[in-house]
Structures are given as C-alpha cells and as structure tokens.
Image 1: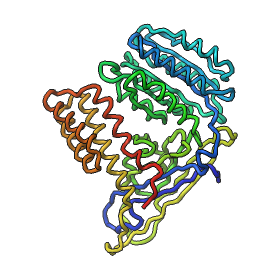
Image 2: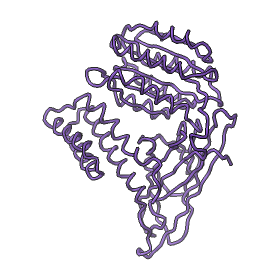
Image 3: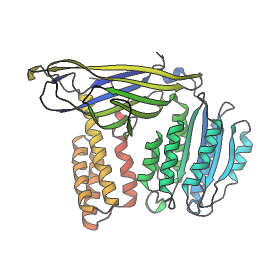
Image 4: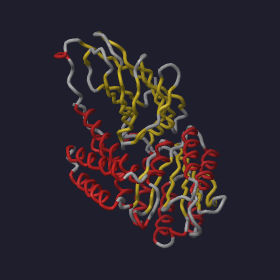
Length: 428
C-alpha cells in the first residue's frame, strides 16, 4: 500500500435504525496526502495555456493575458514542459509555443508578446490543439493540465468542447477554465465552463477584471504544481441493494461528479489531481436497502493514482466502511454534525445551480422558486450577503423574467466556495 495518500470513509451515523424499508444515508470519503505541503518540492508540470485571442480581447484584456502568460513562463524551470495555443474563429488554432522543456524563457516571452487579437471565438479548435500538445509530452512523472481562458461565447461548438473535455479526462489531463470579464465585459457561458472543468476533473472560476488575470494564473499554476497525486480514480464497491443517488466533491470546492457503474455494484469516479494541503473530500448520497439488526460492511473503497516526480504509477489506497443497525431506536447513533453541515451547503449550491439553469432555459417561475429556497438555505447557514444577493435576483427574475448576466456568472461560482472553510477543519 502506498504511503502517499490516506483514505477515510465516514458515515452520517455509525449506528442506524434497522428498518423494513429503504433509508437515505450519506458517506464522506476523504482522500488526503500524508506528506505536508511545506515538506515537498513542487511537482514538474506538463502545461498548455489555451488562450482566447478574439477581437473582444483587444486592449486591457489582451495585455493582461499576455502579462500573465509571461509570468507563468518565469515560474517554470527546465524540468517543466510548456505549450501555448491561441484561438479565434479560424481553424486550426495557432501554436505559439510547441510543447517542450522550458529552457529559453526569453524566447518564450517574445513569442507570447507577439500575439495579437483577431476574429471571433471558436474554443474547440484551441482545446483540440492544446490536447494534442499535452499528449505529446504526457508522462506519469509530470502533472499534466490545460489552463483555458476565454471572454466570450464559443461559436456553435459547445458539444465539441465537451467531447474534448471527456478526452482530457480519459488522458488524465484536467482543464482549469477562467472566464474573463462578467456581464457586458465577458459573455462567456458559465454552464459550459463548469461542464468542461467537471468533466475533465479540473476547476473553473470567473475573473472579473483584467487586473485579476495574473493572480488567477498564479493561483492555478500553484495548484497544478502542488499536486501530490495525479489521475486519481475512486472506486466504491457497495453491497447488493445499495443505490447511489449522487456524488459530489465538497472540498476544495463543490462540484457534481460524474459516476460510472462498473462490474457488479461498483461505482467509479474520476477525481483528477489531489493537491497537497487540501486533498479532496467526496460526499456520496445513498439509499440503503432494508436491513435486519446486525453489523454489516456497507462498502469497500479504493483510490488508484500516480505520484508525479517519483516514477510511481497505479498506487492504491483502500478503506472499508462497516455500519451497525439496531432495532431499538434509542441506540441509534448521533448525526455527524460536520458531515451534515456539508450536506446543507451542497443542497444550497444545488438549488442555486438548478435555478440558474432553469432561468437560462426560460422557466422563470420555477427558477424564482428555487432561488428563494436557496436564499433560505444560505441564510440558515449564516451566509447573509449571499442570501441577500440571491433574494434580489429572485425578485428581478420574477419581475422581468430575466437574470442579470453578470450576477448569473458570479452566483454559479459563489456557492461552489461554500465549503472552503471546511478545509483543515477537525472532525467533531
């Protein structure tokens, strides 16, 4: 068994009532690095910047993007690999820097500075070329990742982008997506950006102004270089009769995860990279079958992953989950307060995300109802400012039938961060 990661499975109750009918349950699975971040060196990376050069990027946006890309070059060393792709609505995209070791930083900076704006936005062409470059240099010793920046709606190729994100997942290459500008300054589709990140195992975020681009690139690169493990795949083997309703990543940020059924009652979930310092926590929403009183093993779980910089591949960490069922309800165990607080935060995020999707689809009445429900949850969680903003958008939607674009872009990301305070929090 590897010494790189630990795997801990915690139920919402350790002792459950023995019922003649199915019952809902939650399990929190935590995948945590065993070596503290300050004691390890940054992992070598295989990075591709896929950057929007369309006409709407002219001026401050383009200058900020090029400055941020050059700062990335400055942070890379000879052990790192870099490619830079720029895209507009032409095909194919332009390869500014072909994937290779970062040996000549000055030449790389000159090539980036020469980029000029033109045309419209066709993101799939950039993603396709970026994936080709990353595959050329892909190696278990390196942390491979794509950093994608755009400020606009991609032109009739959203499904192609999603398909490329699936190819990235298959290759173990997460996509980290940045939407530059909000509202009139950036009309990118938050649902598409979220999908690309979730499918590939990466993350996404809005960058509201050009002056924030360098910090966003810096933080993303730090997260990539801080990977303790890559290409992590979680497999959960449940006993017969257990049904999985949903799987969520809850730390570092909230994301709905795709799960796939394997042999027998196996559920497989792609986790992507596991960062030093934060790890990942996965919330599994289950329905348990009826059970007589007794002690039962509910699940076996394992994570298989690579360790960058070490040559270690297909490492494995495993854990079991055993539960007790009792007929006497007075013996039922207490709720795990930390876990249930995470559940409430996921529900608030889910309600708000569903509302935004319904509003985008034109169902203003249902979206308004969900936004108000989300505002109530947020208020109960002590997120007063976020609750007020959500209530204001519900009022606007009810009165006008539309949401403010900038608010919609920011709201989708804001509730993803509801669990940030849980990182490093001790269990009760």
